[in-house]
Image 1 (cartoon, rainbow, N blue to C red):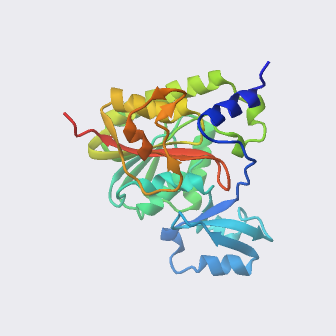
Image 2: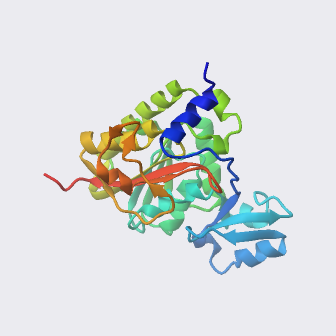
Image 3: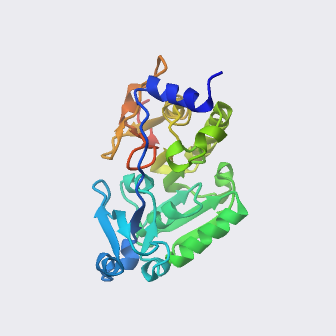
Length: 296
């Protein structure tokens, strides 16, 4: 009988990727709005934190070596930077603009991307952050408080009920609950089943459909997961193009083109505009930017 690991690795090979052991580096992101004139890099250097600029991120740095925990420095506690995986920093940067906008973070906890959105907004406009779990909402609120975010309202609310807010949002971030991947979880192969993937894919479609209802004129959605499974990634986006009248926007981002042939099934050719990141120095990730279609 095929093991869970063999099952998933055989799928990845059919999708064109050969398994290799990832070496995911810890990363931080400078909160630019808070850190103005604070000389954060110099201060961290004096504390024994050696950083390397992440080439595909404006404010991201890999932690090459550190004599202290980067999650316990004075600069961290003051909200000058966040500890955030490099690939996870990509989605919030794909919006055309954020300053002064009405923004929805539909699955916000624990808050890394929420803080990043607020930072890119320069604390202007309105940011609504949702999560369905009370404990995670508490963690989210603590993260926002540490980083002095002052343009965000947190709601204990299922993303599928976002319409209850009665707001048309200019920008919607859907960093959705997903199956994850082995690069960020040593026990992933022993705990994950294909039934999990199918269940998560269905939930993601439900959230995406409701997000479209909340999208204002000329609004943008960024859809992302840390799953490698095409059911949660390209296949969901193919469904969205056909069922929700959405189209994929070009983005200049790290990663490979989205897959347009999944196990022999041909998808909409525009899905190549999505970005698929296989595990390596970052965790695995999938991201794309969507707008309402202009086609009749």
